[in-house]
Amino acid sequence: MPDIVTSAGTVSILTREEAFTELAARINALAARGPASVGLSGGSTPKAFYAWVVRTGALSPEAIARIDWHVSDERCVPLASDDSNFGHAIRGMLDALGVPAARRFPWPVELAPAAAAVAYDVAWTQHSPSKAFDLCILGLGDDAHIASLWPKCPLIGQKDAPRFTATEWPGRGWRLTITEAGLAQCAAIVVLVSGAAKAAALSFIAAGPFDPALHPGQVLRAHAGRVTWLAEQDAAALL
Image 1: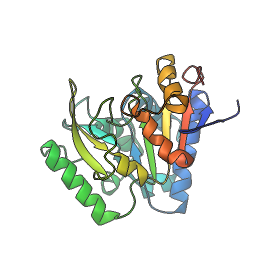
Image 2: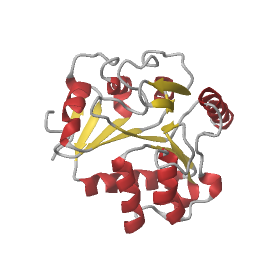
Image 3: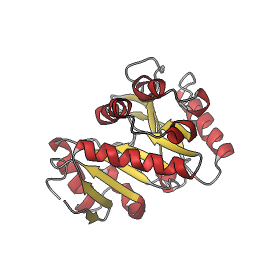
Image 4: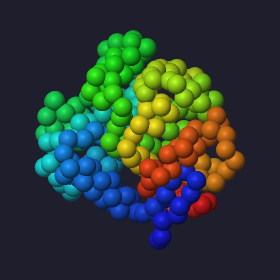
């Protein structure tokens, strides 16, 4: 099926296997050019990607040796917790692939949320003053949230915010997240979208009236040329 060009980026309608193959190819291409950073996402689809990578051996030796692994947002829980996004990456992929410890960059969740965000952002500034991730991988919630930018999140619209910060999501606790400022500095953004429950959210983001406070994924419209949505057919049914 041909790609669909939208105001929020290009939507590629793919099977899950095709989407995972495309994502792995992008990571391998980054590694082929040299050291690079990838921000992973949380959720069931990334966990399925980790299992697929381990099963298929889809990531190249260069990717294992050269990619710095992060997560674009994180819950304020220990890495051993089943709620930890980076913990899932460790258990589902990084350990199995033998990714060196020096290439693993979890948020410092042992600190209080605000302090953890500051420490992470300071570390990034020292490492990369003018750029965030080379590839930022996001998921999409059925409420149109991306990373931990949720509907009515006070971070939305704060163009002068740090690249990474802490936010308290009502009813879900404190989160550490990339911000709009951070997304603006990512070289490429890929959003994995699966399931019919995401169809309305993707449609609003791609073609609905602009209201990012209600549909946070619309903040990606500002970076449409660098955004690719890898969407399964049921998720793209309303485009």
